[in-house]
Length: 165
Image 1 (cartoon, rainbow, N blue to C red):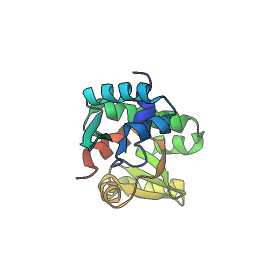
Image 2 (image 1 turned 90 degrees about the vertical axis):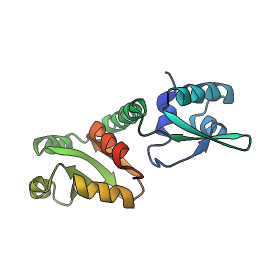
Image 3 (image 1 turned 45 degrees about the horizontal axis):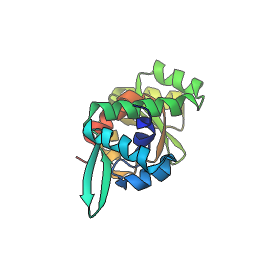
């Protein structure tokens, strides 16, 4: 579905964001008619949730939908490939990190458990290293204004399972 990725990417930085079709149209720089048709297809496939407020339809992302998560992963992968962080990514792969992202200009790495944290800290220096459980707490306390650099699929799986719960 062409254009679906553009719409879903609007929600990456703020998963609780609620926006109207007109706002989506302006943000993706497409006509209202095109956007209206696209948004309704996304609603019908449960990628987006809808709430009618007066004459307006307000949309939000349905994180429990697998297609929505897949589109988030694709968007993140496109962003990551443009960043060229090969050295960091190789280190993350070697140390079995789940995912990594920049948050407030600081590298944050998430590993599966506490036993890997020290190895990652030694390897990456100033990076903040969290276990999966610590990331879930972090997720509930922070705004997701970050730039993913590694592990998009695992990141969106954990976010989708735990955001807002």
